[in-house]
Image (tube, rainbow, N blue to C red):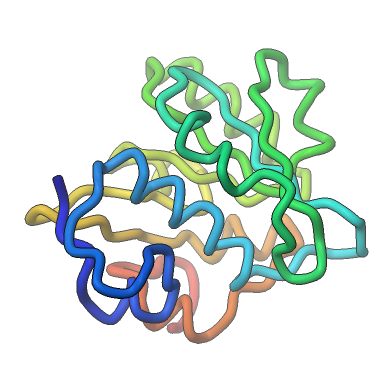
Length: 171
């Protein structure tokens, strides 16, 4: 169980008021949904799709969000197994997988307007956009602005200020 207090969760507001602890996968799911509120994608679209690649630990926690309106777009969640399925994703969560598969999915998403989010410490150094990490019994995130910019995405200054580390850009 992780504490859900602090400035980050107050801004992202993933939990009901008064909630003190939630299981880590539920908290990660809430972060993924809330990242959609603080990132702009090129073009429009009626949907915002979170794609899951690798070990599935979040789909049951993301299911309650499916169909909700996030920044004027309907939220969808789906698992992907092949890289040609990336084109329909706005956000790609890369769950625990071996380094070779992780590097391959990062390369496949590199030229697409996809926010890649991983859960390993080296994810942003390998070319991922965002690493969602556990530190001192809480969830923190790092951002690689070079990757975000290359993907054609814009991150809110509020989100940048809340990141533990921002590489390749200014907070």
